[in-house]
Image 1 (cartoon, helix red, strand yellow):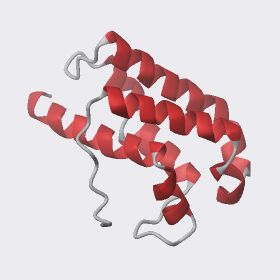
Image 2: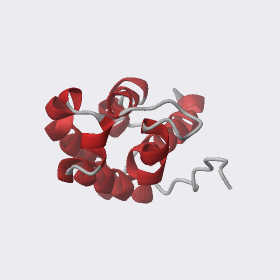
Image 3: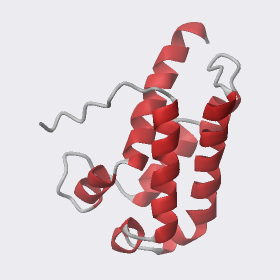
Image 4: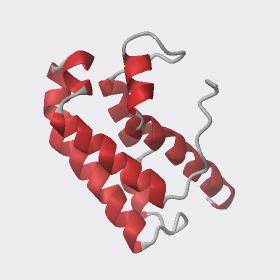
Length: 123
C-alpha cells in the first residue's frame, strides 16, 4: 500500500472537507457550484470512494487515538442520519440538525487529520 497512503490521505482530506463545508454543499447541491453533488453522493464518497472504515482501521494510515475517535464520530453521525437522507431533498437536509452534527463531526475530523487547506479554486 505504501505509496498509496499519501494519496488515500489526500482523498480523505478532500472528501471530508466537502462533508464539513456548508458553502460547498449550498453551492453544489443546488446547482450553483462547479460540481454536481447531493447528500446521497456525500455518503457514496465517504463510504464507497474513501472506504472510511478501512481508512480508520488501516495500520498504514496510522491515525492517532484522537483522529480515530473523530473519524468514528463522523461515521456514527452519518450512519444515524443515513435512513432519513434518502427520503429528504437537499433543501430538507442542508439545515437539518442531524446534518449539522455530521458537518461538525467532519470538520473536527478534518482539523485533526491536519489536512492542507483544501483549495476549492474559487477565489
